[in-house]
Image (tube, rainbow, N blue to C red):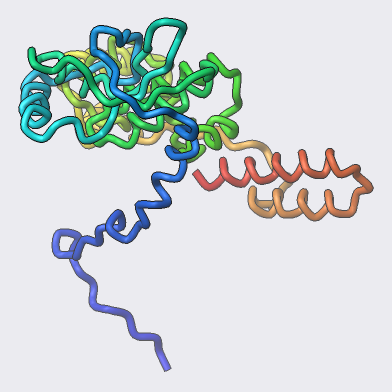
Length: 291
């Protein structure tokens, strides 16, 4: 008996499933609760709060005024997060809310979660977690914050994934974006360029066409991946740059090689620490192959 398949439906007619509505929100907040554990909630005068470099670097004036009006009517629903450093409070999370409150002459103080005795790595993790949960955080800001976290901690991509609660592939892509020329990143924020335009550009070979595409991105002429694809096809190049594949024994696929290596490792007389390290290496290798 032949298997029956559902009738093919065009992409435009397919029903959309909102996966976010099926996620338990308590699971999403657990990471934040752990980071803010022990914080004291009290009111702090706005004039006593110091603002340093934040994850977010792009603010919309109209949006800030709208938020200020909302705070004026309803009050500040979500407290700011500050870190006590001697006699001052350094803003960790909530710069947009802080800026909006500063527009209100009658607003003199704000409820704050006050953190104490946190090291720079912990503060960056808290800052990243709070900001990345907001839809309007630009991916360039996120990429730069992940790069700064890596520079501060010296962590590997796997450790960053664990500390910040994001996927390893997202960490890897963010580090690639952060390493791109500042002119491209600035243009991406000004013209709201799709992130994969920058990633695909970064993977191209160094030649005249790549420089031509860079100028087009900076001018805002290429903001979507489809536009980049058309330009590459016009010049006779493949859209996806060829990836260099590691050499394997004749007739053996990459998955088969990893499987064989895993099997061989089980037969070796290894100490527990070496075996654990080898398992981690095989796991990371498999993740890279799945990207």
